Length: 307
Picture 1 (cartoon, one colour):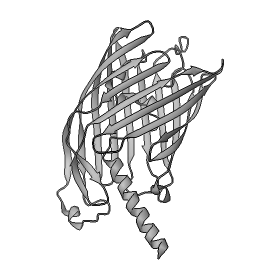
Picture 2 (cartoon, one colour):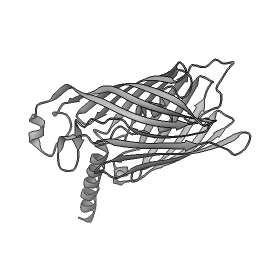
Picture 3 (cartoon, one colour):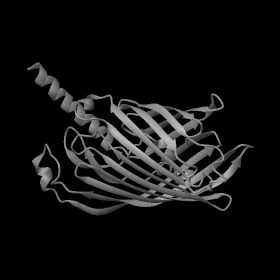
Picture 4 (cartoon, helix red, strand yellow):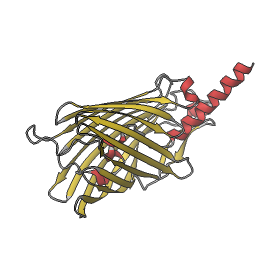
C-alpha cells in the first residue's frame, strides 16, 4: 500500500515537472555553442561564417518526452553587420513545432577590447498537433480538431556585449504571445505562450599555459513560472579538449565534453542526469552539437573559444 502511494505521488510529480517545462522554449545544455537560437545579437560575432547543428533527446525512455533539433548559420557582413538563420524542430507528445527565424545584428565598439551588438529577429513557427497521439486523462481531448500547419509569427530582439574572453547577453526571443501545446497533471490543452527573458554570460581564465577555465551561466525567466538557472564550469586543455559540468535548478546535473578536431570542426556531447522524481522514469538526456567555422588552416582561430 505504501509503495503504491509513493508510486502515485511520483507519477503526479513527474507530470507536474513535465508540464512546467512544456510551457518553456526548447532548452539546451550546451547553450554556449547554440547562442543564436536565443539571442539574435550573436549573429556574426565570431567574425566568420559559423554553422552549428544540435540534437537533443530528453528524458530517454519516457513516452512523449521532448526531442529537439536545431540548425543555425551566421556570418558577419561588412564591418558592423551580421546575419543569421536559425531553424529549430521540437516534438513533445502529440505536438510538433518548427521555428524558422532570420537574425540581424549591428555592432559598435565598446572601449578598446569589447563590442556591443544589437540584434533583431523575425520569422515564425509552425504548430501541428494530432490529439489522437499519446495518452490523455480527458478522453474528449482525443476527439478535438487537430491543428495542422498553423503559422504563428515570431519577433524578438537582443543585446550582446562581448570581447575575446568574456560575454554577456540579454534577449527576448519572441515578443508575440500565441498558442502553444501544454501538458500538465490536469489536462492536455493549448495555452498562450508567455514572453521568455534570457540572460547569458561567461568568462575565460588562463590557469596555466595549457589549461583554461570558463564559468558560464544562463538564466531564463517566464512570467508565472519558476526562474530556471543554468550554471556551468568548463576546462579547456591544450586549446582542443574541453571537459566540464553544469547544474540546472530543480531539474538536472550534467557532464559536458567537446573536442576541437581542427580549426574548422568542433564536436560536443552532454549528458543530463535528472534530479527530480522523473529520474525514476527515464535514463537521462543526451545532447550532441557539431560546429563548423569557415577559417583557413593557416590562419586558424584567433583564440580557441568556449562560445
